[in-house]
Length: 340
Image 1: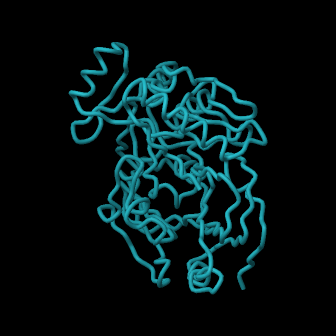
Image 2: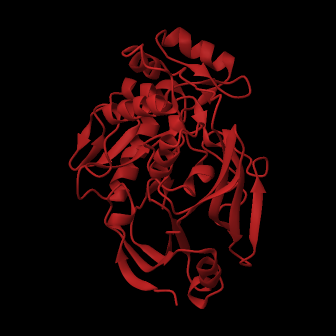
């Protein structure tokens, strides 16, 4: 029997540490429980919100509906050869702990994604990425429950329609499927390391005698992230609030004439990607504090709650940042965080 609670404080269920009430709250630990809740009367009569680790959510007020927390657990070996291993991982597993599970066993492919907050189920939805790697590079399939019928579907990598911080689950199938597990193919030998991100190379050069390995890269990434990003357990935040925008070559050339120092790197489809953090910093927002919220002093992409901050105030701050960047650069920043 599912334990459906009422008027639950969601403070511990979102990394922004926003105080907000969920009118109804239920934790799901299996596909069977997911099917049970989706076919229930309380589900049919209320709006719903699915939460994993709450690391990519900004709550702007109480949620007058049913909050469904994914707490399914388990790591299963599906296939293994001398070169590769395929793992099926329950969506409720903590992402970083799963990465550490793989690093400890020398499974390669996700070491660059160390210390990203959230759950495994959120990884394909957001197509999480960092330091030259995206989750789409290792995902074989995503298992999900059809919210309208309770039927279980398997989505291939192509079915997921991965893009930059995007997937079919955030677009066409938004709020239509409940991700129950993902299956990933990882390397055991002949790893293809990506150390193109400058800071990783610099850290690895500090100990040139060390052999390049899954563990060493993971440790370098963790060190970088800890130096640049606030720990959500200490300062409430949801990581990068905005996506890095892309522009075509002609638009970039125009920007370059007006802002010669503007940084950039290659995006998809011949577009040029511009670091949103640089744009925000140029507008004077980095380190700005407004009462108990603000912009982090080391990373302008991260909006923070120093304690007791309201979600609607953080959203107002985000919109003010968006407006100032648009006025200065004629670029509209798009939020990466889901605003509820």
